[in-house]
Structures are given as C-alpha cells and as structure tokens.
Length: 113
Length: 114
Image (cartoon, rainbow over all chains, first blue to last red; front, side):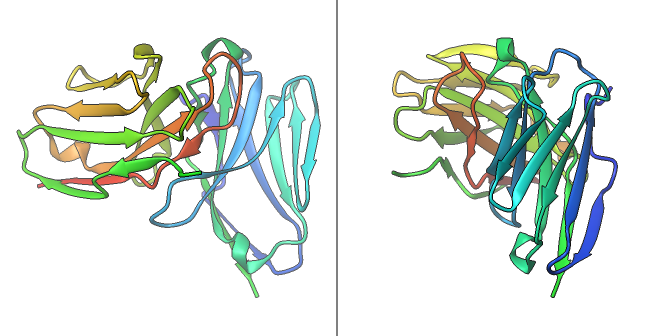
C-alpha cells in the first residue's frame, strides 16, 4: 500500500511557463510534507516544506499548496527554468516519527529552452 | 560545513556476500536515516537511528541491519546479498528526530550485486 503517490512519472514544460507537480497521500497522520529535487548521480536536496497547519508556503519561484481534505499537495514552479530539470520527490512524515519520511516515486521534470 | 558523506560511492559484490556501507552525518546532526532507491521505486525507508538507538525500521528483511556510533556516524550492513539488492543506498541526516525538519542527503552508495 503506497501511502504517498506521484501519479505523473514525467512532466515536460516550456521555459518560462509554470510547472505543477502533484502528490497524493493516504495516511491522515502525516502532518509535514516536503519536496526534494534530485539530479542524476546526486542525493536528493531539500526544496521546500509545508506543515499541516498551513495551506501554502512560498520560497522564491517555488510554492507548495496543501489541501488536507483532499490529501493532496502540489508544487508550483514559476517561471520554470532549464536548470529545474530533475526528478522531484514528494515526501511526508508524522511528528511522532519525524525521522522517517515516506517518499513518492518521483516525477521527472524536463524544462525545454 | 561539510555535508553528509557516504562511502564507498560505488561497490560491486557477488551474490551471497555481505557488505557494509558507511555514512558520516553533518556535524551536530544526531538523526541518521537510510533509504534504498531502485529504478522506478522511489526511496524506500530502511531504518533510522538517533543517539545510537534504532527508532524506526522499514519493511526490509533481517538481512538489512544498521548501527550508529557515539559520534553519530552510521553503518548499514546487508548480509547474503541477492541480485535484487542492487540499488542506490542513500543516507540522510537531520538535526533532531523530535520535530519535523528537512533531511540532508549524501550522494549515495551505488551497490551492484552480480
């Protein structure tokens, strides 16, 4: 039973446009959500996070939206740049198990110049 | 400050052998988690250590084990290797395990079992 799902394995957008990456979860105990970016041959790097007490968090070109009732979160990248091309992982954790994150399978984003 | 260091970066082992992977967390970080990444499978949680104690364990067989030392460095061991154990093994460190924080990942150890 996969508790965190990223249903789109890949996404391709034009430079300058918006990229929207989606993530769904099933465990209602999750209360902290993170997005990581991963380049080939490197470990994932933290991008942005959101606590369940919020519905939006913004950091520069990156915004994460959380819809708790739908158990859905999304990452918006505006404007998209070619350097954003990478695999994006959504992850979720519970405050009682903060050291354990459950990851989605990732979405490969390609931003075309 | 130095990031998370994993050694070795690449490893080739034969089926049936055992292997030990090492992870040095960021200085001051006390929580270390291990993940396995296989193609198309995302990151699967193996276990998490905090202050030399295993706090969480994922759904992996007993062949997978780990430990953490007093300096927070961690090792994971896989015994009786199988072909399916070929994967990228990632270690992540975080400041504490008592609150939600982001994890900092190492570059991983690419294990190939032949």
